[in-house]
Length: 360
Image 1 (cartoon, rainbow, N blue to C red):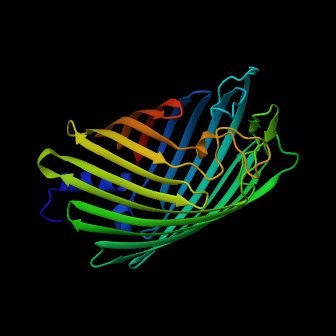
Image 2: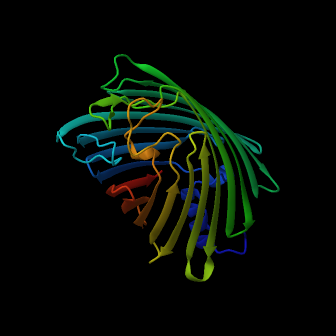
Image 3: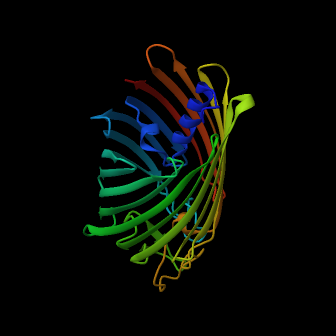
């Protein structure tokens, strides 16, 4: 690594951190406070999401993370047509507008002991029809002069669901397990492979959907009360020294016992356009099979029925661009982002973000 000039190496490490890899603890230590505002505009859904984050060192080996988020959600719902599997008008048109505030608090503490690092976290979120509490723990260890990092993690979701079509609240529990291996292949190349497994039990719907039946009338949505999922993700980040840029390649394979299988392919390209500014271009493609119980039409006698396109066969495209600028003094960075999302079911959306980060 000593052969790489300081600026180029710092740029590469920053991009790898943004990429989400598990790197040696000292390489990630950074004190900052940041604030972001995200704006989502999809068909029938508008979300304004302000967020503030504080990452602070308590000592040379210990740091804390605090994050607060408030989602202002506005939904425009239309009578559901289960025959076409889409949220379009049926013979009876009924448009309603609903608003909700989703509050989220996250706390995390990280402590390093020699080659080990332990992360303990707690996440709490609440909205009018859903409450979730998620404690988590992750243990990482560095090997081979800190060129290799092995991480294992566990978290548990304690959720409570109370949708508008439910007579009483019901619980949902999820056990999540993860293991990942990150490797410096060279001073300017990092690879990661990871595996995740989760098992959800309890009430797995939202309680906010009705299903129009082929013979007339409608029914509540009924989903299985257990869902097992596993996924394998592979990531590669390559710094390109001559042009001061980087490329990230992403692939994720997923399956569950509802017979949904999916593949995700992604690429991100980072390019400095000056000493203190870089641009990130992004593209992601996603495709999935349908769940075993998903149909275009239900008679009402089926054990499981749904009107959600989430369980149908579909594919999607996401295109994005982000601009990040670093001010020399004080240590402030600003960023703006735009993403365009298109789904084969007809769902389209735009995502905007503006953020400011101050390094202590």
